[in-house]
Image 1 (cartoon, rainbow, N blue to C red):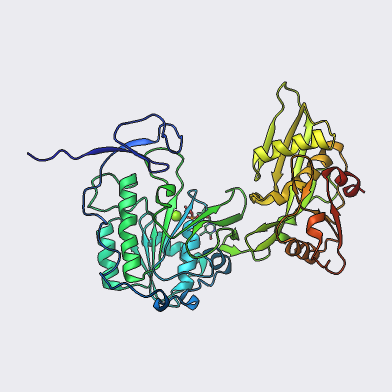
Image 2 (image 1 turned 180 degrees about the vertical axis):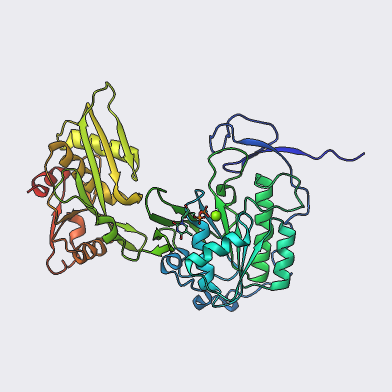
Length: 452
Ligand code: TYD
Ligand code: MG
């Protein structure tokens, strides 16, 4: 008697699998994300990673840094950790329409100067990609387009063409015959990625996968694949703004702190190698509630503007909204302002926004957030030539943060003349020319310093 295929339920958000249906995923706590699928049959990607070989001596394994291939797009190379590592599998996730296909087309255009590139488009026709490419100025001779959704066909073409770079756009629209479930389901997406990983590692073929971030429904999101690939990059940004930020959330070959900043123009994505200028370009200089913080994104200091709005609430429960910064952190800073700086913020609606669509996760922005909130509440303008950074503890003490010198230097480069920073960070830094450093120990000292 033929064995009944085994049924399994998979979460489309995180890939959790359960033998029975559940309303709420116990792993990622999302509701209604489990869908029925057929379990992957044996076989699949259980083959060995490379040809069976001998154990190698650690010291004899080749690991030269120059093996990395640069895409020629500086911002992308930086996020990748200095270029593409041969045989690596790179996942680029992001909302539909954010610019993933555009970025990869521009990247393979440059990369194809070093060898053959194959761009598999499973969403658009080759003609559509060509039209877009013409607008982007793609002129590579060595770039091949393949409009195909079957992984078996793609593998056959790869065998014929022997490309040096591969792009799969997108992993959710490609499918393999070895799994019965529909394209985009968790098992399909995992199996296809598994097979592509074998290919990438076995042939040393660097592979980019595009993964759309999905809100819900039956399509598996890129999070399902994060543990399988070498590098996970997310492309973020507000579709209403031209700026896009590329962020590494996992990188086996580099740091995950780096970000790349791009601007979407009619001729595709343009690198923004000087993001501080961009983020401060529209700063209102004579308005209360605006503070500038030299934040650190990976190894690079970026000056960003924090904007606060504090206004009397007309409802019993005041609103607390934070954009680009953790809202729990904001609640904490508000409490510190009340208790330790003695500003009465109860009954006030509080909004805090990081201008330019950046996300700030480091505690070094605490002091500037406090300054912006106080400035808006007191309706007093912060001195336009001053930047502020430092971590604030629960007793209102200002704590030292990493890399103060980098932050101060970047602020000086952009013409700021004064920096308020933790006293503990003052030692060992030489103030750049024209920059005055003011060290403080407690958040309450801030009030006398920032307003003119
Ligand atoms: P796309 O790369 O197709 O997004 P994704 O692959 O992430 O779904 O980008 C689509 C958006 O980018 C679309 O809204 C139009 C815009 N765009 C430009 O503004 N300029 C350009 O040169 C290109 C190619 C796209
Ligand atoms: Mg696309």
